[in-house]
Length: 236
Ligand code: DC
Image (cartoon, rainbow, N blue to C red):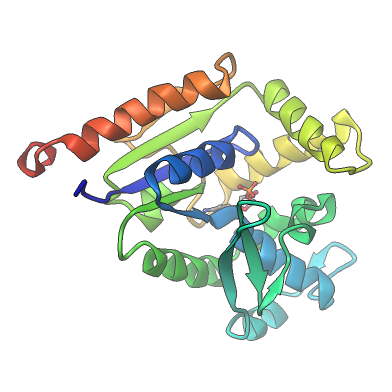
């Protein structure tokens, strides 16, 4: 039997991390963990419960509800996607809204939120065979991951891809709004005090500005297979 490894994927907003992670989890029959979805679920809860009011985050109130939040993933056999559940309810669609995107970086900069979600993510990866994507996976959540990728692409190209995805889902949004949101999130995510977006020293950097999804997949699965097939001693 092939050994199971943990794969960490980090990078900027909208550079295709989840598309890649989903394809890898399918190919390898691994569990896909979308950590951004977990920060989005907390944000949705905060918006629904007036913990974000007039763009102000009530930090004390957020801290008191954190322990009541229960975030899980379930595979939907109809859509063939892993979907996010908040306290037992499917929130997959709601967490992708522009309103959630507009507030998620603020929520993700909160130390207590990060502590809770990082702990949960580490537990999810304990049995290995996991593809996890986010901003701090290779640096904080799984510093011992067997292989790490750091994805990047030109900001305009990333915003265009995200714009097309949102329009395809029926979201009424302009390219400028998406471009501004992508840039703003990148700035907040990489300059925050706690676990900022940062490339792990041992990550393989992939700039996919001019790569097709297939070209990128071929390169990355090749790198992963080398690690899976390497004799145990060769990895250390
Ligand atoms: O990957 P995404 O765009 O769905 O992530 C939503 C936000 O969550 C993003 O702006 C940064 C934050 N995030 C984070 O801080 N740490 C992670 N591991 C994943 C996401």
